[in-house]
Image (cartoon, rainbow, N blue to C red; front, side, top):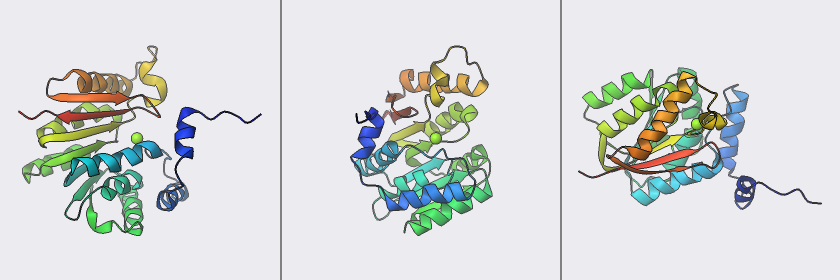
Length: 214
Ligand code: MG
């Protein structure tokens, strides 16, 4: 008997393997980095969101090995750019190498250091963004959300990865700080009057919000 696929495996089975993203996944493994890139289905969604919204200025918080950076940059038009914040210089180096190999090196600017410091600098520079992808240290998700709203162009889109934290968010016995912050992040995404939103529970959970126009 053929083993039945999960719904996620079925969805993935419909798509040809992406050689660029496979190169990234292999590069991340070879570099001994955590293998926690965004799920392929959500990577495709990032490309679609950038393309459908016509976002020109994209901010990524947490570059890791460049997988999501490539997905974001793929959706950009001619003049669009991604700013990607990464704590670790060696991760940013790997991400930059992968994004360049994907032919998108001129579209992504890396800023290394604490993301909150980089966000302060961007605010001082008067930067504004049309789309955010938050995928960094979970304990700062609420801080990142507030900063994202503050630097948002009207109608900006905010995407947050790992909303379920491998099930820990829905397990009431888990009370670690990062999980508590993620619960509050999800609640804020769902209820904050400045946002309209949804939470997709497939893979590791993805929040998508739009900053309401005043
Ligand atoms: Mg993630």
